[in-house]
Image (cartoon, rainbow, N blue to C red; front, side, top):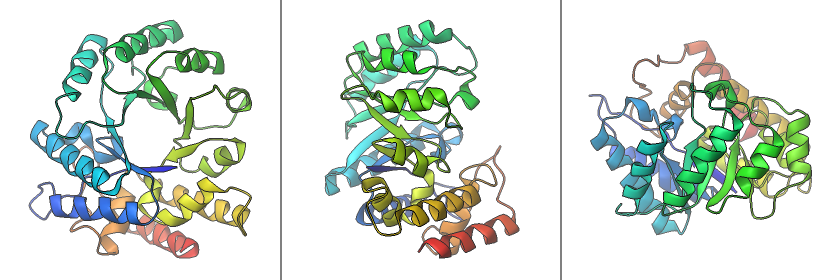
Length: 289
């Protein structure tokens, strides 16, 4: 399935535009997304105040429950003890997620054994399954296919958001010998069509804010639907256009241009997307829809 890691729209006064967030959540689910991720990096979570994070999570959780959709919450930082405390608090949330998206510890580079020990502790403490967010170009911690299989064997680890920025021998090895019951979800939007073809179960894709139905169709039946290859190329081109400035600046600008959110604003340290980049993204979107 396709899970959309929702942006956080802001109003003209810089506050969270709760109504716009709720409307956006409903729309992408109606358009074919199988679920939503609240408080991922696309939500600018690091720039949100605690009350804003709680509000956004409650909105997304409620909408998912109304649709019977999958609800994933971004949580659990790189400090193991603090992440364990955060996970334990999730059990008391108004809407308990179906899974938590937890990033591989960033910057500390604990090694593959340290990553395994970290997730073993989190999985034992958490009230819901974990999806490991593997994004080595942000965390500086690579994991080979064997390490990911070791994570897959941990009780309470349900899958991985696979965002290595490349398709290499480790990617082929992992998807060619897919651990049973372990979801491999594409996390690099440009590479997602290729990962679907290799056997990924779906994706957590910011680009699926736009052309949601096309993304859902491609993930469900890569190569089986008429024009599947052409659709994959066009969606990859759209993803590339949407990431030509730091995420989610371009996505927000396009959503604003379509009248779906009240402003295109992002919070520092992010800056607004350049006008020519937005124009290019809108042109790529027209080719898909």
